[in-house]
Amino acid sequence: MLTPDAALRRILDALRPRAPLQGERVPLAEARGRALAEAVVAGRPSPPFDNASMDGYALRAADAPAPGAGLPVAFDVFAGAPADRPLPPGACCRIFTGAAIPPGADAVEMQEEVERRGRRAIFRRAAVKGRFVRAAGAELREGAVALPRGAVVDAGAVGLLAALGRTEVAVHRRPRVAILATGSELVPVDGALRPGQIRDSNSHALAAACREAGAEPTLLPIAGDEAEALDRALAGAALADVLLTSGGVSVGERDLVRPALERAGFSLDFWRVAMRPGKPVAFGASPRAAVFGLPGNPASALVTFELFVRPALRALAGLPGNGRAVLPARLAVPWAKPAGLTVFLRARARVEAGALWVEPLATQESGHLTSVTGHQALAVLPAGAERLRRGARVSAILVAPPTLDPAAPSDLA
Ligand SMILES: Nc1nc2c(c(=O)[nH]1)N[C@H]1C(S)=C(S)[C@@H](COP(=O)(O)OP(=O)(O)OC[C@H]3O[C@@H](n4cnc5c(N)ncnc54)[C@H](O)[C@@H]3O)O[C@H]1N2
Ligand code: MOO
Image (cartoon, rainbow, N blue to C red; front, side, top):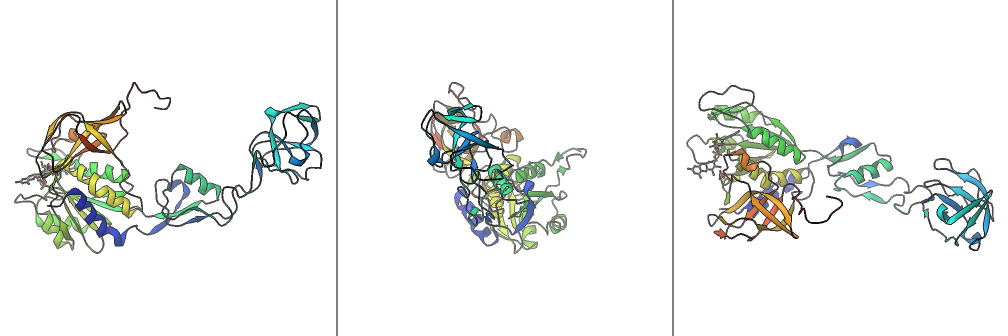
């Protein structure tokens, strides 16, 4: 059976020819969190003109008087209103942060170092050429690449794009994901329950996870466990880049999803991974789309999403890796597990005395939604191990920030 790492490699290899998805132009306000599908070039230098980085006085460094001596103040320059004449020789001018340095001046002295006496400014120290001057083009020369293709747009990048006058930018398209819940026991969230029925929770949980991963989910109508119902439902996924099904992939007599996917034109690459939860997970592709057959148990569906679907969606969106920190951690309780399976425990994570500790949630039952609610980490227990003692070294995939040691001093937490 494939290991989880090998399964992920197969998925990413299969997606490589179609990832990232093509670019689309979006308004600046919609670009955050997306990957650039173009290199953004500075159309003009940044800063666009020499300007003051301090409130103070601009002067020629060569005119700088000896400490305690002064220069006449020729005029005032405010941000947004450049001087209408050059700085006369042997004079200085009042200037404010962001204001254009007038021609002739090459230094600024901060006002804390200057004493003002009427029309004269008395300098407490000698000015230094270039000090407190933000030179034109010092950050970006005209024509320089401000943001390379593939860069992830964060708040700083949004600011940079705005500074360069970009109201729109090309980013990789978000993957469209069709979600299909299968099972004759399922009713929609707003439906009435008859004996033997449960509500479809997986579609909603998976849609939330898709959005968090940067994809656009659509829910297909629930399909019962009959071949025709599955065929009809799968026809509704025609426009998707990725199809997620849940349920019906294990060995039960009514587990009809795999043959239905094959009839719909998908060829399946694997349908078992040596892991718990989530052993019965399938992956395949058609020329148009990739498909993940996720197990029906709610925790199994979300854990396999996290490990396989999330990195796949990010690759399609042009985003790097899985977007999670994976850190060495210590297991807070002893744990016994079957050899041969990698076990993913949904765990709380906390930093204590400089070490990261993972503490499994009270239930790890894959049919229980509470086993996958409020966790901060997946603790990865390696396939080779059978008994792990308290304190055993494992790795932790952080799905949320860990709780910090309350004893550790911090002004920021
Ligand atoms: N003989 C075996 N039986 C099972 C095996 C096995 O290896 N041999 N594997 C078990 C494991 S592990 C899992 S996980 C499940 C996966 O089975 P399926 O993917 O075929 O899922 P179903 O049987 O359809 O459903 C399992 C469970 O989940 C509930 N479910 C299904 N869909 C939803 C939904 N949309 N929302 C909420 N809950 C859902 C369903 O009612 C079942 O209780 O197979 C084990 N069996
Ligand atoms: O993996 Mo099943 O996924 O253990 O419940």
